[in-house]
Length: 510
Image 1 (cartoon, rainbow, N blue to C red):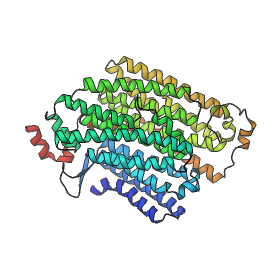
Image 2 (cartoon, helix red, strand yellow):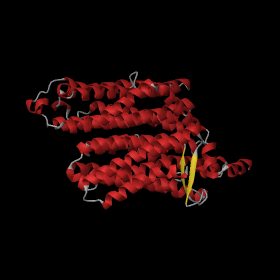
Image 3 (cartoon, helix red, strand yellow):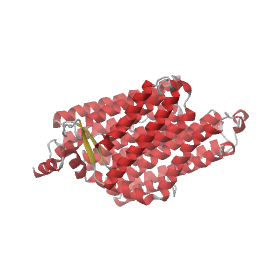
Image 4 (cartoon, rainbow, N blue to C red):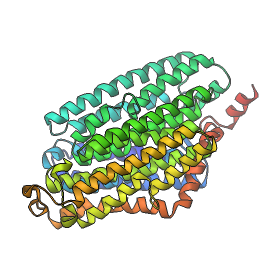
């Protein structure tokens, strides 16, 4: 079991190291990359199976007992996130075989992807807030270099905005970590949960710390008002890189917010979670209005990332079992569908050499399969039945109605309508209408071999099938997300797995 917890970090780490040894052998790097993501998927699935059929699992690295050593913890939420990280890594790897140019491959694209996956996994599995900071910094470095690969002017400009805001968020994060350690003497999250529950920290100071963490991870998750770095940067990278970012980076930040505001900062939900609810609603509206105003595919999709993050925070803010279950289901749905839409946008760009809607058209003739895959993914994002997005939004709406949060329910439904509008705009302009410019007509688009088409379309088809399957075979997934929500609201199993039953019993007796 200890090996199962460490493997998801070791596999990408070892893979990246082997790639560095094979620096000039790009073909070998491709094979190692494929083997690495396949191994990560397998290890993540095995860990999810173990956690789902048993209990929360924890390991102390170096045999140092908690809360003094480095702790790795896997509950249902973190195990679900691990599987999704592996799945997106696998899809992006397959897509990248035909999408990444030779220059970027030679400049370290493959080892950087593995380092980024390792950092994402580490952030999900860590049980210590300082190590969470370390993993996020590794993530920031790897993503910044990936964003600048190729050295285009637009890329550098987008990367500057990306790294500047994220460094500011990291500074706030580090300040919060320092204050937290100064007042508690520990950074182990399970130990912090016990200390907070015992009243060691006064409520006002806890609220201040909660706000620091909210701002820091709100920036990284692209919450209102500091979200503008995302639509200014994500569309500048090659599509395969922006798809990887769109699927995972902000969602891991949302994961951290869910973890912190269910395990630690639960002392005053009437204030903290009400604030989260307002932020969620404004984020939804601003994101979808930004998407509706754009005329380039990946810019539209980038603003939709912002809007969809609002739904996830809505579930956290309502703070009931049903709402948290909906938030977890929504995270899983959005990771799959959003990655898929960015991959589809990359194929459109490759086929017609532009992403501007006014210059596109006629793709239904030359790419009928891509047209069908986009339609399904767009409907899933908008939340139409029977796709995954419908069930995710239904859970959140039901949770909102149950606590009479009429305003946020109304906002979520209105944003869904506007989401459908902006996705219909892409459908009409890029796929359904005929191309206005003969030079950009499908028959004159960039030629591709059947192998390249297969490499591009197969991961898109896989993710589309998953989005449909999540909507049709929804019952076991709802049960799993409900069980994950129950673990979050009753963290005894998490704390006991990290600190041991004896420490928990002593703490509760005081």
